[in-house]
Image 1 (cartoon, rainbow, N blue to C red):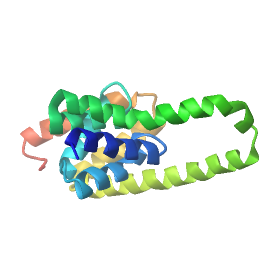
Image 2 (image 1 turned 180 degrees about the horizontal axis):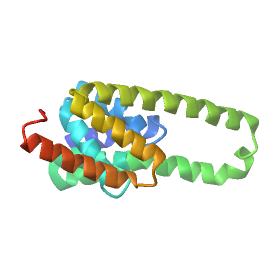
Image 3 (image 1 turned 120 degrees about the vertical axis):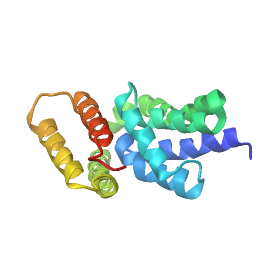
Amino acid sequence: MNELLQLYFAFFRIGGLTFGGGLTMLPMLKYELVEKKNWVTEDDLLNYYAVGQCTPGIIAVNVSTFVGYKRKGIPGAIISTLGMISPSLIIVSILAMFVQQFIENPYVAHAVGGIKVVVCALMLNTVITMGKKNMVSKITIVMALIGFALAMFTPIPTVLLVIFAGIIGIVLYKMGRLKV
């Protein structure tokens, strides 16, 4: 199968089978792109995710664009992005036709409640997995704890925290106090 079609269908599957946004998609992105397709390394994926989080737009769409561009240039970026957003467009279009019938249905409310629990579990799993890989020294653990505390208990925008942590990481790396 043509690699552009493979990109489209891989991201279509990811976009159609995950709920909750970029962080909850990370395990599926890892499985599909790193383990199954071998299109990127785990480090590449984490880097794309980090950059996707700092750039405007939806993280999963940004990651799909980066991977598509790496594989097939601009056509790959476009096709991967379309693959990622197609399931949402289809689902929203269908739901919009029947929204009044679903809105007060107790089964739908319970299903959404169950989905929320699963999304929380997936996010926790992702945080633990990423934490094990990236918190490799006392400095990184302290930075993570400070970042968490600032994000939870201050009004500082998280994007500024991410940028500031990146700057600190670069400075510490240049000083030889942080290993990659």
